[in-house]
Amino acid sequence: MEKQLIMFQNITIAVRAKNILEHAGIHGYVQKTPVSGNKPSCGYSLAVADNADKAVQFLREKGFIILGTRSVDG
Amino acid sequence: MIYLDNAATTFPKPLSVKNAVNNSFLYSANPGRAGHSMSIKAAQTLFDCRNNICRLFNFDKPENVILTPGCTFALNTVIKGVLNKGDHVVISSLEHNSVSRPLEMLREKGIISYNVAKVYEKDPDKTIDSFRNALRDNTKLVVCTHASNVFGIKLPVSRIGALCRYYGTLFCVDAAQTAGACDINIKALGADFICVPGHKGLYGPMGTGFLIINSDNIPESIIDGGTGSGSGDLKQPQMLPDKFESGTHNLHGFAGLTQGIDFVMKKSPLRIAQHEMRLTRRLYNELKSIKDVVLYTDEPENDHYVPLLSFNLDEVDPERVAMYLDKRFGIAVRAGLHCSPLAHRAFGTESVGTVRVCPSVFSTDYEIKKLIDAVFLLSKNKKISI
Image 1 (cartoon, rainbow over the protein chains, first blue to last red):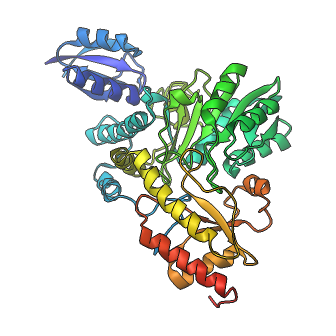
Image 2: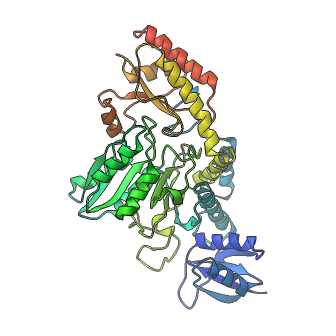
Image 3: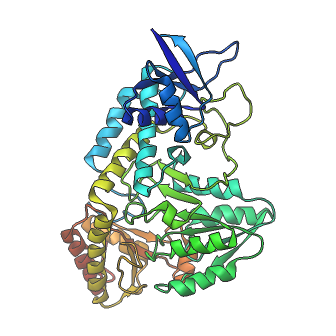
């Protein structure tokens, strides 16, 4: 099943995003951001199955810095 | 044991704190490093701690809560991370060595200079004048304790914060004796930095503390290393909290601190302070009636003091008083200078120190009565064998 990764700089921000989205009814889980190209990111992402666009917009409105989004199989 | 040394470290801890520490060993992976579920759970535990700290201090940026091994570490992070050559600092006359020693080290190296502003008991106007007069054109930072760890005197920190904003000076508050015993709203306080121990009024384990950064002036890091983030870059990450949290966290300690803060919030700092102040006032008034007991402040109340007090028994070494209380009655108090020579200098007690008594939320009238009776007995027979 495809899921969207919302990528953050660190785990603290990723966990904060997860908690805030849960209050807004959007559920996801924190995972390490996979390697992109040939560079390990050492960052963390929030994986969401649905409502990714809504989640990104919601988080940006809350002032979150989002490094990007990616579709991955999982 | 009747434990009245809570200004150093609170004892006992709530059962919820002990359980949280114990349970954290069931998932004690390294937080913020790996992606496996145990590591993520550990990271969630740290986040819960930051979140509880935000709730307690009415703050809304959990990533600006820096978890440290204690208040001293937090103060050093600010002092050494903010100051540069030629900067001037103002501190109060009641500072702990956690403030005065790092500053003195920087002064001896010729990096900074600092002034000491005298604190006037129950006279905030004079205290504010004192701080204003100590400021210079190159004053970059004002650091002061929220309340003396020796005499319990509170400083008018909100007004000092306003003074700092007016003069464009950074303001750092050492809340070692007030966190958990006073309502602290960091925004109303006007502080750029607030430094807090976890093991005192927040009833967490030793080895925990934190720094709240409420400022766009982010200090330089004083410890650099692995953070689990941006690992391909040899430069220290600048994002918070990672910039200040190199190395593995004290997960067990912060799991306990989260519950300690929960405990404090359920009781409320105001109610805790009322209970402790009632005991402190009883102690003050009873000690006052004992011949040869020396007290150093006016009768404490919550507006101007935190619930702790210092006393001496005329012609008796305070260390002997503390030993007598411990060995004969099982009462734990702390004697000496309490790591605050400036405060003792301000009260003329630097050559001997004092006996300090500090109740906690768990202290009882019975325990205070036992202490009063024991001091009374000693006052009647100062040569009593221990």
